[in-house]
Length: 355
Image 1 (cartoon, rainbow, N blue to C red):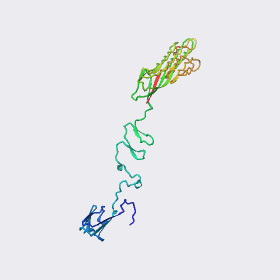
Image 2 (spheres, rainbow, N blue to C red):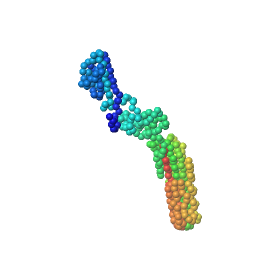
Image 3 (cartoon, helix red, strand yellow):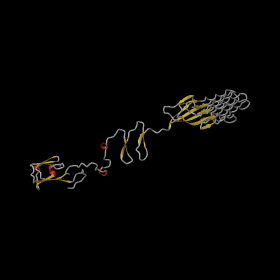
Image 4 (cartoon, rainbow, N blue to C red):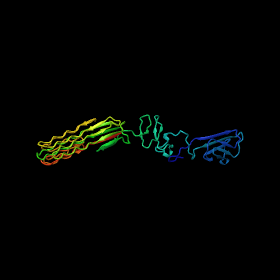
């Protein structure tokens, strides 16, 4: 009769077994019936009552043995309450519902493996990689693999404000960018009898260089100390050289930013400004700016690549200001009094390390 709802797939075929010329009471019919009630057993066309036979598995046992002239027929319907087991490799994707296959139904694999598809479109495993590996595409037609992270990129940078021996770090950089800034010269002091200004110091030179350190084991870093301030009626001290030198340890680079010269003291005239420091050995070499001679108006100079002057914004008398940052010059003292110049800013070496 008709019914509502979805039912399990059943074997709806009718099974038939025939035998003649047998004198046995037992017969293997070739299938296992769900029950005796699913069978019609006849001998010579006469239907047998279910009490006249029994089943165990696919074996039919009659109440009495046949005689050679008997014809036995067994007809069975094998779908009454009995689910069909599909033949191997016979279930297509159309017979499987979406989201119906759970993890428990998937074949076991190796811990950490991933599933991909090979060039033929068949599923394949991606072997487990090391703890720090990343999954990397190998392009169309090739399965991805776990590989060590690609090299490259900034490892670290270090600002050196004092002399140092650079050693290749545990990360083994292959390239560095070195910035070398010489220190600034000090400003000259004022002479108290004339009311003039001491000259401003010169700024330190600046270099930047890209260096392959694949074969370099170490480098000598020198950081120039600041030029001292000029005392009363005394010139400012010269700045000092900063450098990176790796020629003694497998390299070929000597990168030098010279210090700026100190400004002259004032006398009957304003003191002359100091000359800026030279820059050599870099891919980019920027000499330090020259110090100016103080005149009426704000007392300032251009500064260095990595530093600024601290300007005196008034024309009144006073001691000069120190340079700011790295490599800037000191300002000269100004006026009729015991006024000193400003100190230059110190040098610096900055190393950027790359894999």
